[in-house]
Image 1 (tube, rainbow, N blue to C red):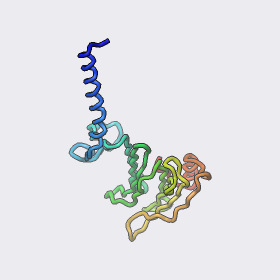
Image 2: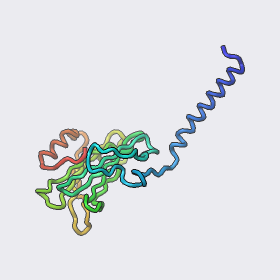
Image 3: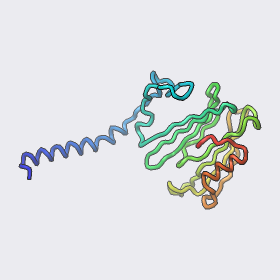
Length: 197
């Protein structure tokens, strides 16, 4: 059994440790403006795989986790960018831009769980292929785990807006949703190229 001075020392160490642990979430929650790569440049501006790059700055220091992906579809001239951010649950946000010049053509707001994006074949549609998304569709009363439906939306090129604009979505009730593998297979069967995931 420790002496009274030893017990006080252990108590002081325990209290100090608790104070540090309690302060950590507050410190982590402070605003932080991460940069991409060195000198605030691109995260990894390389021409191909196997090339080392400097360690990037943290990209999601105020969240539990995040994941960023970028895919270039050369025939269609589109760049797909995806950002998944996780806390108690995860949301995914999507952007489509022109590979040449970087003009943003489409932005899809964050959606819980994420979904599937596909692009029309350029040999069928020409310079401005449509983009299609199948995403969970939550109503105000749906729990975070369970959307009441899934929205299938096609975004077609509008030359006046210089953007991909949504057509009316087709919503499938959750009870009739066939699952993500079946959605990807259906898109492939219809001639779409699955862009994510």
